[in-house]
Image (tube, rainbow, N blue to C red; front, top):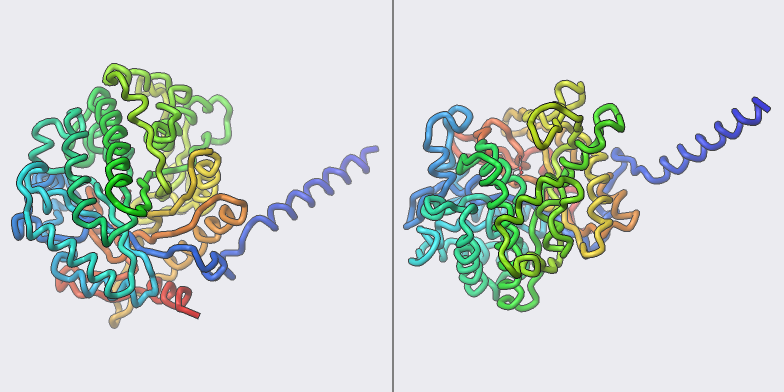
Length: 473
Ligand code: GAL
């Protein structure tokens, strides 16, 4: 009796490991050709992190200019005044992008280059700058993908409350309309926002990012107005740009219970609602995720008649940006949330230079989770990457650990794709090293190394790896 019971357990576990082995893709032998011909390969970047020229040619002041110029906000008091000078070097950078055989380039428009005060007067030199970038992409056979808002709100609008003022819906709509009219003939791929949970949470709740605001009331207002503005912007793009492919990008992390304990399940549900569901579900017509975190009902205080309908917009794709996993436990602080994220250091797991856990299976888990939504038609990984302590030696950067990172994460993306998740593209964060928000220039995420003294560029080994993998056959 005992023997046969053991035998069936053995058999079952054998079957199970066989099933797992079948599903897992070997990172060491991965080739990017396995993703198929139609899969999009790109790199991503954001205006404030690369452009520099912060006050050139009529550009207005953004909240990031203001925030970085205030002492104590940023590591070593660094700022993006010059950044990597993409403003003057974009031709070289787009050429490097092309040489690595990427066919899609994701960049953002700086609102204050177009409208220095956020609304009203237009700055023709700024408008022309983005024509230059778009034309250069097209000339080099690279498809431009535009993000409308990657965190650099005009300071003038922040002085009127920024994302906590309902008027932002009109301000953002006017900006969207202008960009759609101006660039819509040349650019078909648009992302409305970059990581709303990031800029609302860090900028309006925790004060860690610009504009440095704190508090629940700011957070709830900014959440609702951001969701409304995002859907409205989508509608404007839809009605203005012929054959537009419209998405928005979201920071997403799988959330797990600390030590797998069931007593943490409510903490897990709350963090999942805040980090992964809050900004996606309203557009899908599912409303805010009150079932995961009932305190979110307070958003209703800021809702007007008709808002529930206005929150909906059918995006063509969802941009997923995954950097780490979140491990949560029940906790006595902070009140209302009663949950805490366990630091990766405490869990003795591999981390990158910013302390983010390196957990390749996390991207598989989150892709599977998002693939479950009926309304999600297509997913593009619009950011994924790792910061490494790179050093330039004789013109080369040997970043094997970054190559290993990409192989491991990409094999998990492929696994999700093979299991039917509609994921059709992957954008590396980032093309070049750049200004990493509050962390300044220390974390290097690029495929291209930038010497911050001379601003000279050098393709890293990881860039050569992509060039080889993506070479036309
Ligand atoms: C994302 C953000 C990017 C970049 C990246 C690396 O959250 O969208 O701008 O900073 O993180 O940490």
